Length: 171
Ligand code: FES
Ligand code: FES
Image (cartoon, rainbow, N blue to C red; front, side, top):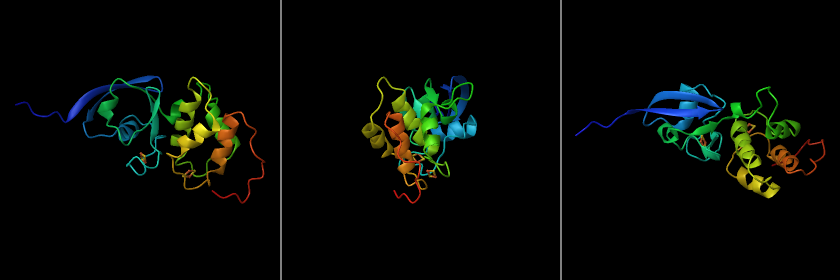
């Protein structure tokens, strides 16, 4: 009987760049992206699929990279937060809307939030406020009180952002 293989060879494309690597079968995709490939914009927090901080785009879908094994991503096209801006540094519309509306504070949750919103935004039809807010139910932010994120969502949906005076807002 052959021994089980603890390491496997995989290839992934991350932000348009091809990577070949040998990974342990138990390594999560998030850990692989951060530790082996250096895409540290992908944050790991709960590692239980709850907080959304580790979200990346994989073959067009927003997925939690803490819940996937790296070997399951073999052959996949992945976009991390480092791949959202244009080659010239121009922000993705989601990044711009988040900046315009103070939709981040410490920034820990931000890569996952940005990837989820950008994946909806880059789809075939412009997402509605309701669709984007529903998608945010999969993300925990401990800082912003969420109102900045909701304003960014309204801007992305083409609705006028709220007043610039945001002092004292609560979640
Ligand atoms: S680290 Fe993956 S959902 Fe929290
Ligand atoms: S900005 Fe700090 S956790 Fe969201």
